[in-house]
Image 1 (cartoon, rainbow, N blue to C red):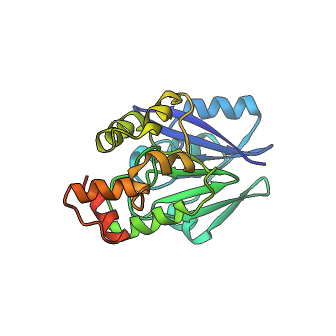
Image 2: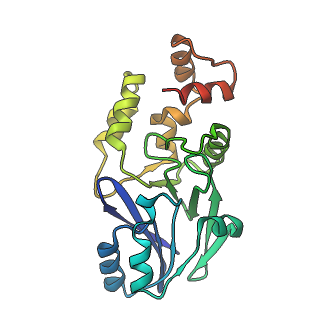
Length: 232
């Protein structure tokens, strides 16, 4: 069975190692020193270097890792075409999730989703691609995963996300509960959490619909509700 280790770097970026008994894969591996120590302590060989998308804050560690370890870099386009890779004979599913960027990907292994800048803990990424329609389809794809799926995002935006959600929905009791359990050393949520705290996944929730109606925003269809939420 594969496991996942999380590492912070820069102001709020989150890097990951997916690893099995022998091998590891760095995802957005900007925390190069911490990753190196973990590999040495666990006796792991770095086999792959990959990214959730090609924005520089996520690819900054690639060059160092590829210079210091006999690892293979696989680009986002190739990963999207592959749809699946194996590490220590265990599968890692790859989902193209365009929206934040055209080349955004998520990695799904066991009950873990490494979601990059597509889905954060409590919010979603900016739609830098300009394709709100594709972003909507990507979020719908992730919403279909099991509710116990653990969401490991590309940044720690939890406090800002909860602050915004609280402004939008001050009577939501789940927001304070989630924030009380927040740990900056291990940042995650479950998909079930997201359906309680993340307004961008709750466009069919009656409370969110009422907010859109009160704001005078279109709300008649799911697509209209998604577009209206994207204006906040």
